[in-house]
Image 1 (spheres, rainbow, N blue to C red):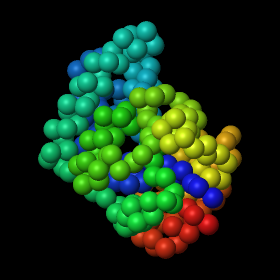
Image 2: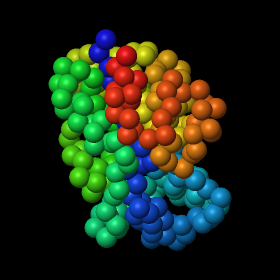
Image 3: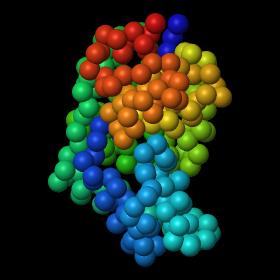
Image 4: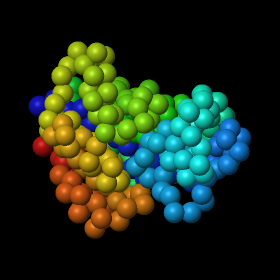
Amino acid sequence: MSRLVLFDIDGTILSSNGAAPRAFREALRQVYGTAGPMRGYSFAGRTDPQIARDLMRMEGLEDRVIDEGFDQLWNLYTLFLREELRTTGASVYPGVIEILARFDDSPEGPVLGLLTGNVEPGARLKLNAAGIDFERFRVGAFGSDHADRRELPRIALERAHLRLGRIFEGKAVVIVGDTPFDISCGEHLGVRTIAVATGSYPADQLAACNPDHLFHDLSDTASVWRAITS
């Protein structure tokens, strides 16, 4: 069975070592005059537009004002993120390079893709900073496509159909991520889910979300590959 495998980025593939939240909050300050509350809000698993809207609503801004600033926000965020990553770089989690190499070694096998809350320019910057070529991912759905993460699997499947001429559905779609949002976003499509506890959620919390497979990290490449392809 042909598979489409959609990886999350932050907490799953890599850590930006604090570069992304620093750049994000500075862009918010520049555009809206506030970065939002500094405590009690987690970026993990949320799309960039959702994060911005949530934080600015907490500061009392109206949606109209938030929407009007979005174009400038993403432009500034991209600029600030590039500068931050030049200083911090990005750290790749165990097993990631090896599991991605499996896709390169299996050109007729599963299709490698992305499903991430990052706006697309941010995703590109983070992966490239980690030494991972953005272009090796043949399909992608991003926070810049939709603020609601639950809509991203559908977008990825539509793009796969348009670009590859192939229809993926049900357990032929595999979502790999580190948060409950990754596990739940494709439930309505019946996808296969692989949770990895390299992000901010411990393994027991991820297990409570009933993923099809759960790993502490991706270092057991053979087992992860079996979970993807079996």
